[in-house]
Image 1 (cartoon, rainbow, N blue to C red):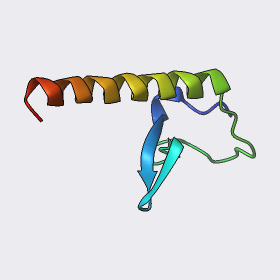
Image 2 (image 1 turned 60 degrees about the vertical axis):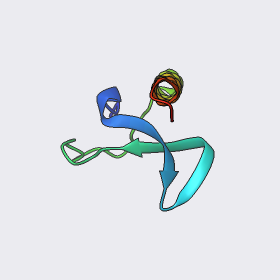
Image 3 (image 1 turned 135 degrees about the horizontal axis):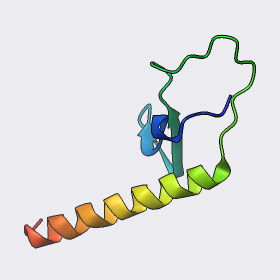
Amino acid sequence: MIFPPGKMRVIEVYDAKQSEEGWLELDIRSVDLEGAGKIYIDLDEIEELKARRSAETDALERAKKLLGG
């Protein structure tokens, strides 16, 4: 089974533990896993998720600076 990229994201903190590289979160609530013995994740997707997280963090920092925070 190829895991859907839209159901993955990289987060910075999990269980009050921060990671420099982040944590990969797989949202399996609506994914049909019946009969799946293996899950495959394209590592290129991971890099894209990390880049998106970095861009979101940069945008948040810019917004804070504009608002005087």
